[in-house]
Image (cartoon, rainbow, N blue to C red):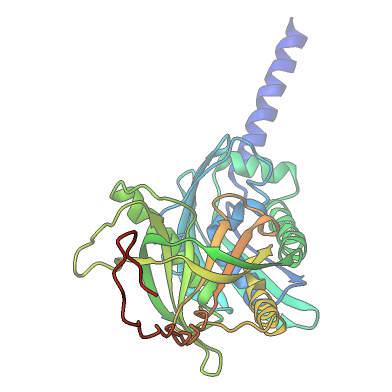
Length: 370
């Protein structure tokens, strides 16, 4: 019994010693990791900037079926955010700063503990150098895990390294896997829709579209409006020389809906139109190639674009349907001029010449004109 008592006391002392050791470990961390992503800088930045993509590469949530993400009206750019719940707890990240294709600053809170993150994107030979820094504090149980795995630097650094490796793998495959199909001449059916319009630089158009679509979807939910098909983009102008495009992000509806005078959301509609259709299977960043293919098809087929009718891009399958960009489908419609068949000049009307009647004679048997 005395031996058992000593063993028990030794175990208690060992446990107390471990607790004291863990408690006295530094709970603050400042971890920096870098990797070269084999994808252009603007593409990498836009991907990381949108929290809807984080499910695809973040090591602490990827593969965890219990994780449930919640996205607000804005999930990218300054003010964009995401929140989640998992078996390990709940957290939230907010973009506090965003500079296009350059850098991001973020504030994160996980299980009540705050931290800061920053991203730097630099174009280098072979791709984009991404530097990810995380800084903050951890609680007791996380320090226990850190002690078992070699310290906070090693534990958190390994997580960030894995996330960057996932990011590279995801972008190289998901962004670069695409195909374009020429569907020929079709009739695009007309539609009624609600729209949000913006004037943007061409390179910022995809990012602005994502933000606007999130806002439109929030508007529909808030006002309990039913959609009547897939969202689409309507181009009012596209000026490559001056790097400007004016477009609307639209969601179709069944019946006309009027919004308030000062609302960013307005009503619109278009009639059925004859168009050249091209389908892009893959990430939206390849849409310029799809536009070129459509233009080449129109020239090859000796058709003529109608400059007075706007180009339409239907987001048939987008990030709301699949987190994998390689599986997205965009249907592009380029309106054609409608030619009326020439009306032939009417043929001359030839009237038969009626011979002048000769004097008639009465016959009691019959009456005739000769």
